[in-house]
Length: 298
Picture 1 (tube, helix red, strand yellow):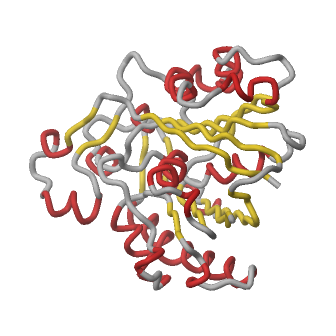
Picture 2: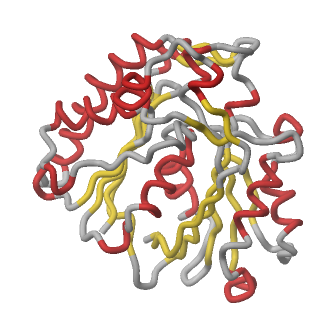
């Protein structure tokens, strides 16, 4: 069973101020619907590998170096168009031994849980995996495309995973794919998104799958101490919480002024809101694909 030992994240210093760029947008809309007035974005000197290498400095690599069995990167916008797999370059930057499995996962908003589950197949008992997430959608946002530009931020995270040992363990998980809706969020010579389709998916399919997942595990909404949901937008989080009737004590938090950082949203959220202090937590990623991932950690 995989144990989540530590999460760290890094935001680029460069910011875009939404109100300065799009003067007609109202403050109320940004506050209540989007949840951001500024967003972190990669500078011209930064890249996926660069940001992942920087965030790795927040963990004590030396302490676990000889026991690292896998480096995993979740990204759909890697450097060099994904060739070579960026995890291999990160591996080199960290100065690790050769007996390490390195691979990239092309998954988006649901991707963090994909990485957690995949790690279990690549490390043995008492070995570690480093799971990185970095998916700069700023690379593919079309110039002045208001609908996508105000949603997405850039970030990198690293999670230390261990096979066995004390800590938060991944108890159960499920994945769902709706490939018939693949065009709802697509890179077709630039990022294009059908907001109505995405919203319908988030407020109908996602709550239903969470309810069914809890039922399968003989749990209900009140059994969960903390929900952590993908940060699509503040409005989406509020709507899913409403449809699930989540009590205030366990309502999923939302982080202001970071935006939708794709596969990085869940680890950032968990780090910021002290996942280690909660007893039973439910994480849910949803979006591009269209895809849903749900997991329970205890």
